[in-house]
Structure formats: structure tokens, C-alpha cells
Length: 323
Ligand code: CUA
Image 1: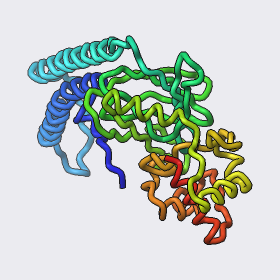
Image 2: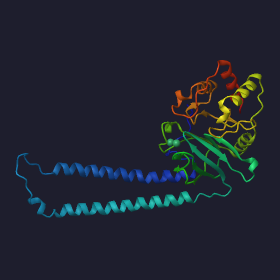
Image 3: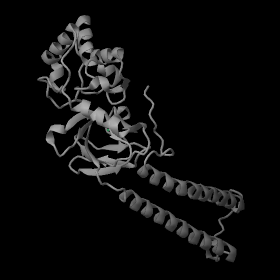
């Protein structure tokens, strides 16, 4: 399976660094508090008076004041808890401020739309002819801020790429943005972080941070329409794609397939995975997926397609040519 860094403790960008720094405050403080509470509990259990089960109830102790030591211990525990909570509050407010202070000049704008169970990404541009759409894999330039507009298309999903930024929900009807910057080239794995139905676990999102010129090359390729099929077989595959039900859901730029109910396939062969990280993108996995998607992702909206072996091979050759 495709790995990709997926670790809050290995930040690869300014936002993730701020979140990791907050975690480094939270972890030791909360660990010490937990240990102290457990010790206090054990001491209390040890010191609690024990009587025989048939002894008469002694309610005299209820009218007695607690000993001075106990009052002092409880008083200082309450005081210490208040101070620790204030420290944690200050740490999270400062982290929030740090997150909001990411410089956004010259930012890349991406609209990310969450569906059950995949992601559509629309790379915005002032020049409409430069806008392009892809799915389940984002490429971003290293060192340049990215503003992601989050749109929930059906139910609530959540954007979470732990090595790059914190989480933010995609709520239908309530669009919001999250921004991040990748400071090191690499592949970062993200995961939908809000339960969104049966295949929530198979809703991964890969962010590939490229050096600036690699990113420009990738974006230029994405803007191009699909290449004309070079082989006879791929040509037959394209005809099949347009004639069968595929074209009712998927778009391939440069062809008449323009539906937007499923991932854009214009450059599907250039992606690492299929079905939002459910499968590695290899010819055999593509074939198996087309024959029986429900086997790999039960509940996915993609129906099984009844294909003869030569038809499957042709379709697969065509999809494999979509670099
Ligand atoms: Cu989408 Cu969980």
C-alpha cells in the first residue's frame, strides 16, 4: 500500500508544527495530572475506614469537620488544577493565533469537495482556462501557502493531513477554509476524520509536496485534455468508456464524458491510488476494481460493470494511457 507520512509528531509544515508544539505541552502536563490522580485515588482507598458488613452505620463522621491537613491538600489541589488549566488555555489560545498568522501572500487556492467516499479538488486560478479538477490526490508546491476551501457535498467529512495541518470539517451548507504550508517535499497521507458512513475508513487523501518547478509541470499536465489513444486497443477502450455507463458519472476532458458524479479521470493513470486510497493504482487493481468495486469498497456508488475479458483489457489500456 502507498505509505505517505501520517504523523502529528513529525510535522512537515508551519501549521502542523504549531499543533505539535501544543501537544508537547499537553502530553507531559496531562500525564503528570493523571499519575497524581491515580496516586491520590490509591491513597484514598488505602485510608478509607473499613467496618464489618453487619456493623451499625456510623453517621457521626458526617457532622465532623475534615481534618485541617485534608482541607489544605484539597485546597492546594484545586489551586494547582486551576493554574494548570489556565496554562493549557493560554497555550491553546497562542496556538490558535499562530495558526491564524500563516502568511498567505501568493497562496494557491484549492476547492476541496468531500463526497461519500472520495475527494474532488478544483485548482482555482484567476484565468478560468487554467482551472482544473482532479481527485483524491493534491499536489502542492513546497514553501507556498495553500488555502483550501472545504465543501461538504452530502454528509459531514473532515479534512485531516496530520503532518501538514490540524483538522477541519467539511459541513454541507457551511463552507470554510483551512490553510497550510508544506515545508519539505514528500508524500503526506490524509484521512477523512469524521465518520461519514460505511466506507469512512477508506476515504484517504494524499498530499504530494513538490518543488516549485515540479509542481508547475504537474499542474501544466493536469490542465491538458486527455491524450488521444495511441493504440487500437486504447481507442476501443475509449469508445467503450463513452458508450457504457462509465461516462454517466465520470469526466474525461477532451472527450464527451463530462459528468461530475464521480472522480475526474482525465489523468487517472498519474495517480498513486484508486478509490481514495482503497487500492494501489496498478493495471490489475484497476481491472479488479472495474469488475467488482463492491468487493473492495462495499457501498461505493460505483456499480459493477459486466465486461467481457477483451472489453476489460481495452478499457484498462485506455485508462492506463491517461497520464
Ligand atoms: Cu468522509 Cu469520513
